[in-house]
Length: 518
Image (cartoon, rainbow, N blue to C red; front, side, top):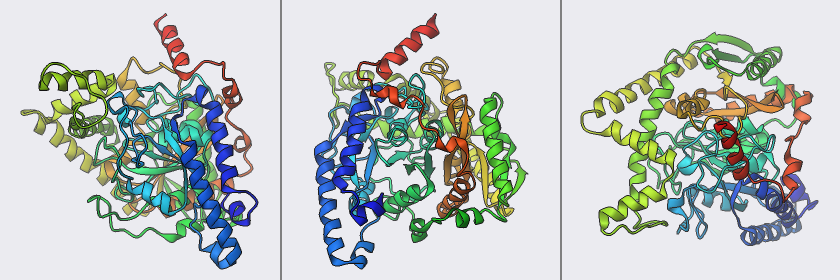
């Protein structure tokens, strides 16, 4: 797309209008967008066209010096601050709130010349694995409209999978980029903790949250990551680690990309093939591993023995941090407010009506874990186990492993309502992704085939700051599977989303719940 824009084959306005048309036509069926800002987007596209025209008149050097994302549409998860734009975090308690400033990544996207189309739907405060916990209704998966897209960044994933935007921004606290990327058949990356500034992002669990890209392939994901990564003085956890410019130069030819796999050593952690894993998903993962081996890589069996404790540990640490971060929503400073008669009653009424059930559940879990008499028994012990989980990864990489290969999700996309009645079953959806957040490492999910007509994701996990190497491996895998039949398949039910009289995701979800009750 950038090459076509620079050559003048397309105008940025034409590209923005085409994507906006897809989004506006299909959002009734997918509910992937919470706001689409056509006027702002077209204004940014026109500004990009002015810069492109001027550069073409000045010559090839001026064109080559243009920022990589100039004129390229991007979707933002609705917890990213965009000055003057809504930022609900998928919650009724922030309904009507408009951000008074830009997040760091919004500033970086502006500098890169990207065209922001709007804000995407998400599980409330990023708490969920299915995108059924948004206060503004669930999101449908374009591969099967009565199935979930994964969460919490399901809206962002769907905008890319459904061709509403070529790029999107998500956040990943326990798998919220990688799991929806897997369930919708696209590339999604969680960078190393500290790689991207969290300034201007509505916080869920501050020691786990990380911002990352959604894209259709490795080169697009690398380009978006390069645009938003880097040190920011306003975020103390933002690391002063240089962002490699080679992210913009992943191999263009398949032969060169495939060659990067030769001699690689990949670890296959046995604990990630969890009990109850869907058989079709496991077959696709093992086929992907075989493809890497056939390309000249070595596959080694490894053990990460504390993986089994990851889920329990995560659901102490993350809710504890959430209970502190969400204390600020008191009906006085932000959006939604409800009067109860006095200050305490206002507080109780606002939070009782403003937060959804999943958020309340996690606030109670976190408050309990931090309470007097239980802090040492739960929170402190969980932090010690977190250290052991990180040590497992450190030992694996110290043995010379380039990256770990594993499933992203134990199952493909599941139907609406299938796990809502059992929170533990829902939490298990992230069993293969959340240890990476606990260790602060980078991970990426890439499509590796279909099971029963639904996408399956392969996860690659690397040492800290190895995003460039991970994306080179992904590019190599794309090259060696370029002729695979599944690569030519498109979201099976996307055409049905063009029917404006069809059911909405909320109606499909309600029908599924009735079916479950029966």
